[in-house]
Image (tube, rainbow, N blue to C red; front, side):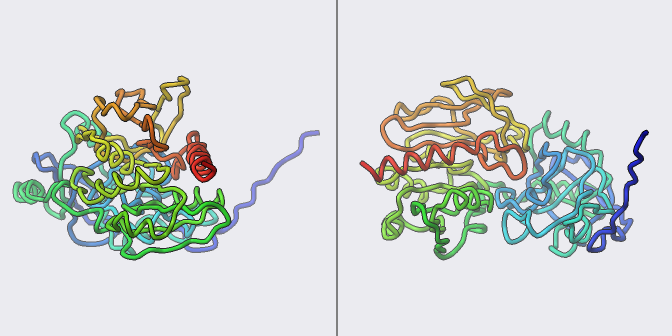
Length: 378
């Protein structure tokens, strides 16, 4: 006897579809290349550095990641918005992208946790978007010619390319100052007290530490080392964040002071800051690493991890003698991890907590906390 299984369709708890206006618009790059599409989200123009991410899911985390400040994000995966947006997927209190470009914008959000579809979400939060774009051609163009500045406009033309060309570069903007908190915040916990330097921290990093029982003191990136000492932390984490790390001279000096006093972990931008604090150098990549499928190898063991990344700058491979390269990217051999040879400090270019993406590397938070415990016992 064969049992027949009947699927029962459940209606979503909230409206799952929306009307998307059919207004033509275009993304114009500074080299004049134009990609036509249809406007979604907020009205008005948008401009910024045009980058792409290869993540297949996690678009809400992408939109709300402070590391994307000042950037128009292109989703390489074609269908975006099919599971909507929910209250539990934020990486920051609101969106940070300058614009959002997709191939196909789903008008039906079918996940039971969804509270609004893509167009409504972008519109409600003032994010200008573009759908119907040949994102495959756009990504190929950016890979071949490098990242460029661009504008989303209603009417394309030479003047639009000129507007894109005069937009300030990431190195000309205080992007970290735009996303960092302005005052300390203590999140209680039974475990060791960790000072988390907020350069644009993702909620996933905070959650990863809190799940391990840490008491977290979120401090502004501008806080001096002496002020951080006053909180008597057992360890320090340098967060992710947007822009060029080399322009953060004061933060680099603070990191140099903290290195002598506490176990330290750097994540993404924090990885670059650790390198700079030790005398290393950074450079702007051709198109960066953005996505949740970046393969990284641990040098000592050969262990391969699939990681989530979002960065356009990298550490020069000729690191100072005080540092040792611990991880490399298997696609282009860029530096993905560092360890200080004499001090309890290490860093990774990727996000161990994922969000979106795999959690292959989440054990690195445990490795950091073991350094903290050893330092406390010493």
